[in-house]
Image (cartoon, each protein chain N blue to C red):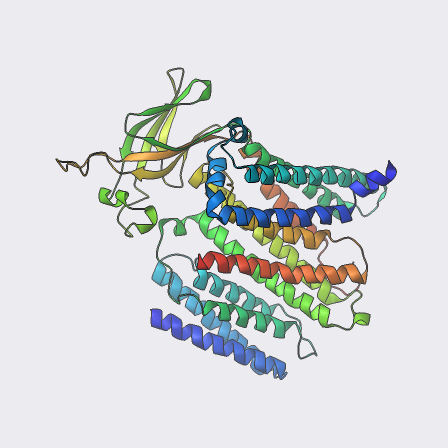
Length: 271
Length: 248
């Protein structure tokens, strides 16, 4: 039993897992770049994890294998982290110069929580990607919430909206002045309202309404040629673990910074 | 402006080549003068790119690599200790700078087009910190190459190893700062702080390389040798990602 614990908490074991993870992510890059599996990853971004497996043909078997393998390797890394941290705590209790080791232990614990936060983000909450709405339209969310687009303000040439965003002529529209006004209600009671701009989403608690792009107005190419208002493509998401990651990530960076300052090696005999 | 940038690039390339040659010849004062001149010129090119494109010079292949070369050049000019050897850390830094300039040959030497999100703080920080992280990693690699070139009997407690490790840690911090800026950008632009995408996998691969370098067990010369090899490989992985992104 003691030998098993020693093995599970050893650095050799850690480096072994890290090597496996490196190969796994390199494989992930190849899969994500291939035409065959690119759409599978897009689907993984659109839906949360339970939905990937609810319909048999939704995710290809190879992507399922890759994902399950990744979860397994991460779980083994987590076990290694727990055992390694536990032995470090025992050593810390006996050590005199424990400050830098304590910092390192905290960094590792925070890293574990950040990794868990990443895992939680594709399991918890909800996500409605590429939701196309016109002015006055709404979308119903879980727990009785409804998001309604009250106003769409687009400053620029609407003809540009028929092109791909990357082909759009520079200066053809003003992204800083274009927005959509949204209202959030729950059981028909107003909760909050505000504007969503590019890179400046509307948020209320965990719920976020992100403006992805404007969509061409319906009928602009029609007989009358009369320009109508464009629509919007929104991403509506709720991620309950977002705040945890956003707080812990800088804590981890600060911890590494403090550790670096405490252990900065300037002299030949520093170890 | 494009002609000025191209001329500046060519002259800076030649100045860094001259810096390397004078450094190898141990003409230290001339080498220092040339390196500072090359650094000033690189700074001027970056300023020109910034003025012409109305955005910080950290985007796309050419200006991103020029920014990395600028930080690395500054480290080589002001953060290197004097050495007796010809092929010391400084010489390796100049070789790395020349490698960056060599890679820049394959990119269009002009200011990147102005894009709305290129003036967004978190996007600027994401790309800027990545450039800084690559510079620190290359500077660290120069120390580890110097360490590997030492005879084995002189490798124990070698200060080059310590300094290489310091800058690799700095590189990790800069890279993680960039990642934090990236997650804020992703959250505000796509409604979630990360995505299953090649870009995410590439970032994770770099973080894993850095983690691997710091987790190699043992306090013996063999472990130090392995650490130095991984530390030298890490900026190559980072550079590959930059080049692949710049080309695609």
